[in-house]
Image (tube, rainbow, N blue to C red; front, top):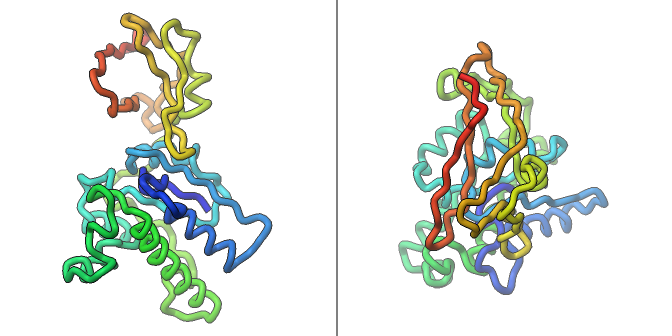
Length: 261
């Protein structure tokens, strides 16, 4: 089982209980005990689906049986209805906490009021994480029963359909490189004034290079920027991730001195 997501999947602001996704894995272990059951939490606070898409191969082993994704909070520019249309097109099961809790929340039912389920109007508290886990476990129970009984109502039963054409015309996957964690360490030449730091919380990593020395340079080793798309003269997109949570940040210049025209 592999989990992708932001600070909610990391268990941000929980105090006395595991995060919702850890509770789900605990249920899997209790219901389907097996020595080879493993859990990888590839969450990163503040991360959205863009990073997960670009670095999917680096974050998710190819033999993963169950992959969960939680990006609604950090992908706030995507309306839930838009995401639902996308997921339904590719027949990817989705869960909505809004649909699960909306009525009780709006009616002020005890135990479902915002002050009882969230900490800062964004992140669920201990009770909120339990609700997240309950919704996901109920979904897995339904589909486990459908698979065991051969019920035609199970979304995950039946033959697998071929992957359809892209929902957005010509939006095919491109070849890509993703330099995160140790790959980002080896990509950089020895540089004065920079240090490799891990500013993650709750045991979840947020690694990167940091400098407080004015004028210091961080130089990368040569990278293969040949386009993997035919024709090979297609533009290559370079994305640089920056941690924005600092105060009084300085400015930096990004340059490609050996860029070929």
